[in-house]
Length: 172
Image (cartoon, rainbow, N blue to C red; front, side):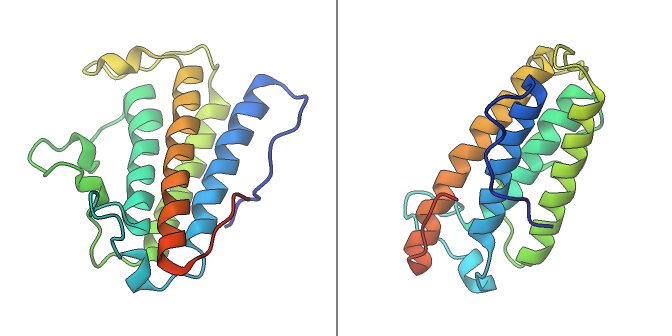
């Protein structure tokens, strides 16, 4: 389900504004995937960053949401998340050759819904619970702000990639 590309209200509580900004950036990520062929979604156009494809960024953002909200904040298992697999090669979460973009989008949307459920169920002052990672000591507020920054940064990458692929550009 495509999220609306709308800014949060000018006047609202902190949670509404934080989640609103995060959802807007997530919607931009989804929009940048819209209408791309499988070939283009997996095509590398940045010579210095060959894994930085639309599909690779989408997968990375999915696993980053999982990392911060499920693994570090809730203390759930890191199994299955390539970022925690010491045997995997660097940036394994961006290696998605042969994975259909529709599946990557579904996985991302499902992960974002899970993240929003976690955010809604806890105080922004609560801190992470994973015992093995220092970054789990951050508050949920910090984690949400970090995900706004992380998602916006990669939405910017997707702007450039999309423009190089087919000339389409735009913020929202």
